[in-house]
Amino acid sequence: MAIKEYDIVIIGAGPAGLAAGLYAARSMRKTLLIEKNITGGQIALTASIENYPGIDEINGFDLGQTMQQQAEKYGMETAYCTVDSIEPQEGRHVVHTNDGDFVAKAVIITAGADYNRLQVPGEERLTGYGVSYCATCDAAFFKDMEVAVVGGGDAAMDEGLFVTRYASKVTVIHRRDELRASAVLQERAFANPKMVFQWNTVVESIEGDKAVESVHLKNVVTGEESDMPLSAVFIFVGQTPNSSFLDGLVKLDAGRHVIVNDWMETNVPGIFAAGDIRNNAARQVITSAGDGATAAIRADHYINDLPA
Amino acid sequence: MAKPADVNDTSWDDDVLQADKPVLVDFWAPWCGPCRMVAPIVEELADEYAGKVEFRKLNTDDNPRTAAKYGIRSIPTLLVFKQGEAVGQIIGFRPKSDLKKRLDEALA
Picture 1 (cartoon, rainbow over the protein chains, first blue to last red):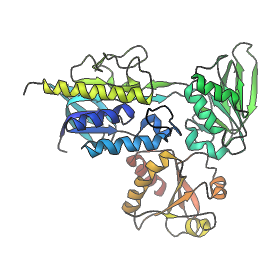
Picture 2: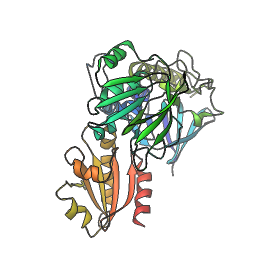
Picture 3: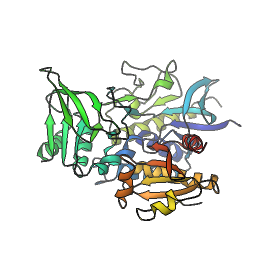
Picture 4: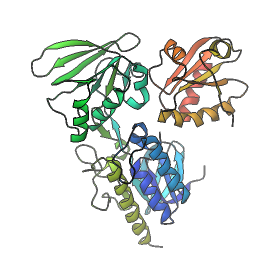
C-alpha cells in the first residue's frame, strides 16, 4: 500500500479533533482526521448540549456531524481506522494504523478519553442487557421500570435526568455524600420527583441471569450491605485518557494525560495534543474545540518553520 | 446502494423467520446517534453480501413487541437469523471490519 503523505494528521474525531481539522484545512494544509469509532467522540452519545455558545440546544451526534461536514467543506479528509503508534522519522511522523501508514509533518493527538467501568462482577456479562454507559442509546427500553445511575458528576446527572423521561424511578448511587455535578444540574436533579439518592454507597456486584435483575450495594460508612431490585444500571464514573498508544513517545502525567504547554505542544517537536487527552483540560465541548484550534494554528506555524 | 427494507411486528415472521436466506436485522431508533453511524455500514454490507444474506431494519420505537421478544436492551443491535434461529448478535457500534468478521462467524 502506498504511504499517504499529509501536512497534518489529527487522531480522534471529537470536538478537539474536528475543530483542529477545520482550522488546519482552512490554513490550506493537507489534513487527515483519523477516527476509530464514532465521529463526535463522547458527545455522539449525548442527548442534549446546552452550553456551546451561540447554539441554544443541540443533539451531540448532530453537532459532531455538522463539525465534520464543515471541516470537510474546506478539504479535510477523514479515515476510519485505529492508530497503533506514532514514529518520529527524519523530521516527519509516521502514523501506523490497522489500515496502513500515513506520514505527517505535524500530528495533533485528540484521542480523548473513554468511560471507566465499575469493574464489579456481572458488569461485563450484562453489558447490553441492562448495564449501559449510554443513556441516550438505551433509556427508552426501560419505560416505567426502576433503574439506577452510578456516579455523582455532570455526566451522571445529565444522563440520569434523561433516563427519567422513561423510567418510573431513577436511583442515583454515589460513593460520597454530595454531588460533584455543576449547580444547575444538581438543582434539576434534586427537583426531579423521579430521582432519589443513595449516598455513601458503592455497587459491589450486578446480578441477573439473562438481564439485570438487581444490584448488590454496600454503604461505605456503615458497612451495611443490601440488594436493590432494578432493570438497568447506567454507569458514569469518570474517564481515562486514551493514551496507551503514546507510551514512550510523549510525556504523560500521573493520570496518563499528555503534558502540553499553552500552545498544545508536547515535548516532541511537531506533536501536539488537545482536548480531554491533555493535562489540565476543562473537558467541555467549547474548551476542547478551543484547544483544537490552538493546536492547529501552532502546527501551521511549526510547518512554516520547517526547513524546506 | 442497497437500503435494507423495513420489517415490523406484523411482517416479522414472513420476512425474517420464514426467509430462505440468512437475514441480518438492524434494530434501531431515530433518536439513537450510534444507530445512525451503523446504518451506512450496514448498507455497504448489504451490497457486499447481496444474494447471500438479506438485510432488514426494525424501528424499536414502532415495533416494541419484536424488540421485547428478543430482549433488546441496547441499540444498535444487529441480529443474524438462519432458518428462524438467532445465530449471531452484535450489540453497540462496531467498525465495519468487526461487523464483517462477526457476520462471517454467524454464517459459518
